Amino acid sequence: MSTEPSPAADPGGCAHCGLPERGHARQWTEQAGWHAWVRPSPDQTRRRLQERRAARSDAPA
Image (cartoon, rainbow, N blue to C red; front, side):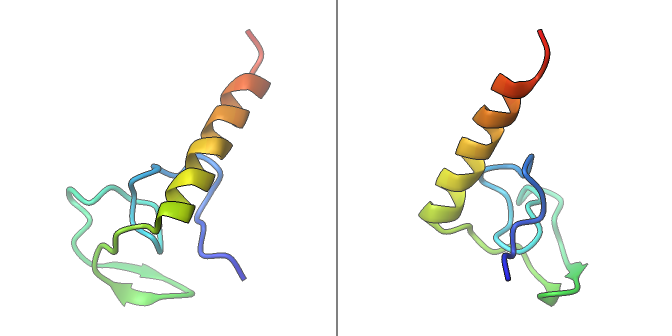
C-alpha cells in the first residue's frame, strides 16, 4: 500500500502525508498515525515531481 497522499503532493512534503515541513507539527494519517514531518525519499520526490508534471500536461490550456 502506498503512503502517497495525492498526485498533487508537494515534492518535498512529508513522506507520510505530503504536507510541507513548515507548519507541519504533528499530523494524523490512517497509515502512519500521529507523526512529525519525515523527509521524503529521493524516490518519493521523483515520483511526486513526475506526477505533478503529468497533471500539468493533462490540464486543458
